[in-house]
Structure formats: C-alpha cells, structure tokens
Length: 287
Length: 223
Ligand code: SF4
Image (cartoon, rainbow over all chains, first blue to last red; front, side):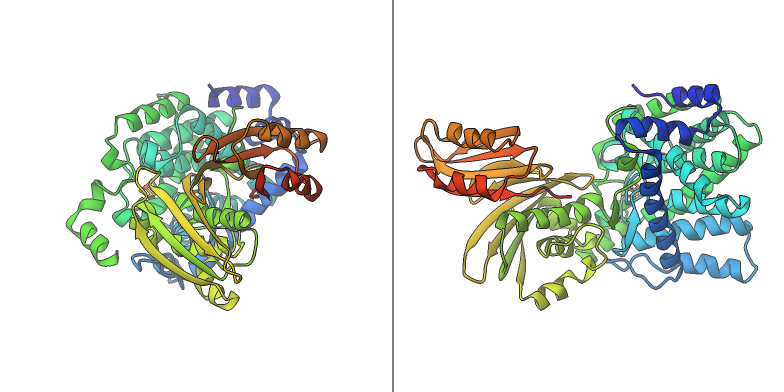
C-alpha cells in the first residue's frame, strides 16, 4: 500500500519538495519527461484559473436553478471593503463557489479529485499564490503535491462519494489542498502532512446527500467551507501545530468510516439533506 | 506509486457537473457514433435507472447527444447540443425505460442513418467517466472503448474465429482481449476482438471476404 509518509521521507532525504518527488515518480511510471508532465499540469492550472474567472462573473445558473450567482455576491462584499474574514479567506470562499457554480452549470472544470469537489484546490492554491506572490512553476509543483496525496488516498481509501461519502470527495480535496498550501507557503513536507491530516480529520464522517441527486446542494457550498478548512489547517501546520494522528492513519480511518456508512448516505439521495421536506420538494418540482 | 497516476486524481478536464452522468454520457454517445460509423438522421434515446431519474439535472440528455455529434467531454458546446443536433439535421427523442437488471447509468440508442440503416446500441457509464458498451443489435458485448476493437458478425461455425485471428496475426495486429457471444448454437455469433494496433482497412477488407463473415467493423478507441 502507498504511504504519504514515504513521500515525506524521500523529500526530506533528498531535500526536495513533495511535488518534486511526485514528479520523479510519475516521470518513471508514465514514461514522460518532467517538462511534459509540467506542461500537462499547466493545462490543468489554466482551466482552473479560467473557471474561477468565469464563475466570479456570476452569470451562470445551474440546470435546476438551485445554485448560481453566490460567488459574485461574496466577491462584491469584499470589493466593498466589508469582509468579515479578510481578503484571502474571502477570496478563497468566492473562488471555490465560482468553480463549483461553473461545474453545476455545465462549464469546464478540472476534476480535483472529482467534479463535485473541483472548487477546493483551485480556490486554496490561487489564494496562497496571491498572498505569497508564488511563481507559476511553484504553483504547478504544488499541484503535483496535491495530486500525489490524491494518489495515496485513492490507493488506501477512495475518492468517490458513492463509496466513501463526501469525506472521500470534498474531504480528500481539502486534505490535498492543505498539503499543497503549506508547500506553496514555504512550509516543510512534514508540515504539509500535518496540515492534510488536520484537514481530513475535520471532514471525517461527512455524508454524501445531494438533493435530488444533483451536484448542487450541499456540494457547491461545501467546496467553499472545505477551502477555508484547508487554509485553517495550513495556518496551524505552518505555525508548527502537529496532528497527533499521522496522515496515513487518518486516511485509513476515512476509509473505515466510509465502509461503516449506510448506503443511504452515499450518493443515493436517500438520506441526509436529500430527504428533508425541502429536499424532497425540490426533487418533486424539478423532476 | 500505485496504478492511478496524478492525472487521474487531477483531471480530467471536463464539462460538469458529474463525471458519471455528464462526462461518461458524452463518451457513451461518442462510442455509439463510432460503432454506428456513419451519418445520423435520427436518434431515439432510452434512459434507464439513474440516467432516467437524475439525468435532467446532470445534463445527461445534452451530454449523450453531444457525444453522438462527436464532441469530447471537455467541449463547452455540450450545453447547446440539442440546438446543434437540429442544425446538423439529427432528430432526437428521449424516453424513460426499464432495461432490467443492468447498471443504474444505462442508455439504449436506437440510431438511424439518412438511408434508413438502423442500429441499436446499449451502454453504461460505470464511474469516473469510464464506460462500457454492453449490447449491439441484440448481441451482448463488452466494449470499454479503451482499445481498437474489431467486431465480427459471423456464422457460428468451427474455424471462423481462427481464420479471423490468423488474418490479424498476418497483419501484425496484436490481440489484447477477445470474446465470442452467440444467439444460439450454429446460428449467428458475434466476436469482439480488442487489439493494440489499429485495424487497417486492408485487414478489414480481408475479414469481410471470409465465407462465413456477414459483417466486420473496426472501431477506434475513445481518447
Ligand atoms: S455531497 Fe456527494 S455529490 Fe456532493 S460533493 Fe459531496 S460527495 Fe460529491
């Protein structure tokens, strides 16, 4: 079984970032040069940037009409100088909503790791990029860090709401974003692992309960709260806060909790918010 | 690291909202079109299970038609697929159906060319955008669309399959997997061969000349 701990060890031993270790590994597995891998990841990054931009205009409505326009509201509040949480966190929230709204309205996104959870990673990374004035190259390396953790999670657990609940989708996205954020902010590989562990611990048990089976409610807003959670976990880890339970054990716990979750709470729309009176009404009206 | 690679976890680039109900649906439509292999005049699309229940909110209808129009999952015209079908001259209709004990995300395409050539193709979206074609004109198949695929409709007689594989070997085409399904013993059989290399038109022409072969088609893999 893969272990994130191995990636941390290698990074520490060779004095590399996790992302660089992941690139070396993937270069061998995919038989592609580092330049090719970086070019492919740059394409992902460009689509992420575009989806943020498009979503912030607030002009898109989802197919059911339940979501759309919220990213623009959050951004407008910040632009008026009224933000409660300050610019970076406000921007992360708006960006996560933006990408998720684009996804819900049949726009182009990068699954990260899934379409439903595609807002978390771009929101967090683009925000950290801005705060620390990071280079494009470093953002791309951080995306490899996030993806490397994703590969480990997919191997030890899964990234599917139908299998493991939302903890496996937005939970995984949040952990991936936390690890990548720490790296981009100049933290150590070890600190990144702590951040991811803290983030995923906070998501344990989160059920998948989409209203009417659509990737809209609660999915879109969970991307925004997932992004803020990733930033909080990164902030702690960068300050030297450690997770008492190591990351790989947290991932295994996520997998075990997913197995204990009843089927009604795993993307079947037969439990959770989906069967609230309002959830049922939306379902009946729409279909 | 293990089997999945970083681009499985960050990617694909796709039009939302769902990898199974949108991206997978586009791929199903595209695969059906590749199998049909020609111009389309009419498509009746039967939706089963979750495709019928939640398809509307996931744009599954649009995605299936976009695929028939040979779009890819990241094509931003997917949301306009119905208008584009009309421009192309493709008449589309949808109905809910119960196809029995099949995957919840299953669709049956009933396709017709301008010359009234007809074909029925059934397939399922099995997660993460991956698909499998399960039936072509009443024949049970299993075509994931990852490989070059040769489909042979032939008399169920000894030696026919061997002749076909010999032709492939002569053409230096390596077989990745092969399955035979038949209606009943001695009647018609359908052989599906997945290959590592493209099936050249010359090899396909030779297949068609085999005495017991009624039909031979080469299907390109999805990207
Ligand atoms: S609630 Fe379910 S469908 Fe929505 S984002 Fe979470 S895992 Fe995906």
